[in-house]
Image: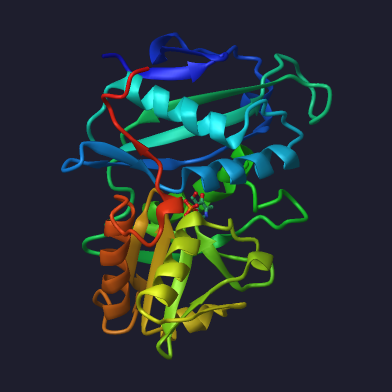
Length: 309
Ligand SMILES: Cc1ncc(COP(=O)(O)O)c(C=O)c1O
């Protein structure tokens, strides 16, 4: 079965889904997207599309910021995604990429008086960061975009140039991932992940007002920590030096899952190994993304690959 896309309001082989080279979004980054994991449960022979409704709700917010009209409801988008997944024929973990964009083929920077379009593709995604062995990070020389520049609370395509600059700088310097600071020097997040510290037995993470993307994994981790482990999360501004002194540190994200941070700027975090709280959260998270924790039914959207299309 060839991979399929939902494009121009229909399902088609991915090889036929093409855009013109004058497409506005290609030139100016005027698009927003989501990354959704479809976790394959080989026992139940079903995919769990984890918190798909929340991903599409966030996508609607990105569309509002960019004046993109997305002519579907959240339920319709979930249904379309499930249908595409069934057609695509995968029986393994998948990564789903919906993208809404300014589709007019015109030159001229603006958001108004342009046509919009939308597509979804399903693909596989190998481990994005090493969740088993942990990662080594540096503080980036690039600063995270500010809400006064491009709203970081949207997953806006143009913003990812900021992330790409930081990621490449980190990897070309021998690190796995970058940690970006805000304009005023507070800890913000990784190039595609939110960041948590374990400090004084509590979780600590930068607040939404510090230009983070409000991650769905971040929210999941805060709820699991509170509900299951009885650990509170404090959302407040975090200084760079607090990272160095933390007991544990980890990233969260749909692509990255929960990735332990072992070292920052050549300094070991805590003992330099994977911490106890991080390990507990990783275990809980691995179970919940397969739809196996009955406490959170609203997070699961199950799709059987045998469902009639
Ligand atoms: C810049 C950025 N921060 C944080 C995240 C984590 O968000 P989520 O957990 O919703 O995937 C992502 C990934 O979507 C991201 O691109």
